[in-house]
Amino acid sequence: MRKKVAKFSILPVIAGCMFFSFSTREAANLEIEGYSTSNLDLNYTVALLEESEIVRDQSLERALPKLGKSYVGFKEALGFKESRGNYKTINDFGYMGKYQFGIGTLELLGIYNGGEFLNSPRLQEAAFYTNASRNKWILIRDIARFEGQVINGVKVTESGILAAAHLAGPGSVKKYLRSWGAQSFSDAFGTSIRNYMRKFQGYDTSFVKPEQNPRVDIEAFRA
Image (tube, rainbow, N blue to C red; front, side):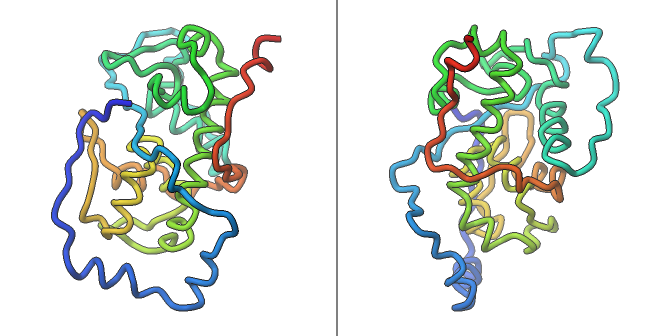
């Protein structure tokens, strides 16, 4: 999947020292049986849609309902940010639907037909959860290490990490966290990991269960 813009800076020496300063107790808590990302593709992203690119729909001109800090509130807020909640939109880079998925990411999730994906809101919602589940697995140790820390003036939360992974891919989020914000990423519209961590912090994403290589059951959506 093509990344749009990536900006990286030199990792300060002090960042390395801070990263390896976790206590023995914290390290023990990070020993998760069977955890490994060695064979997983970490370099994929979704896209943010500029307002001028949105396919207009009268039904989408209403305000986003207030859903609080639940998982539903999280995904609806993120979908509204990505596309104003429009399941049918495609941007100039080929990113599709409410959550602006690229075909490369969809294939990782077991979805190979872009037209079928674009025409099924239920399939798009399943793809969002499945992608979040995959990202949570990849980033589970980083969530444990960095949640509650403050990086670049923003408190790190699980939901902020998952939102940032949706924007930039889990690989970019790992680099950002482990460099204490020195290695960053911004998309073509200037939206950064820091921006998404701030905007989507504090939601309850415990509903999302980490899974190493989840796949969407396409046949369930064809019945």
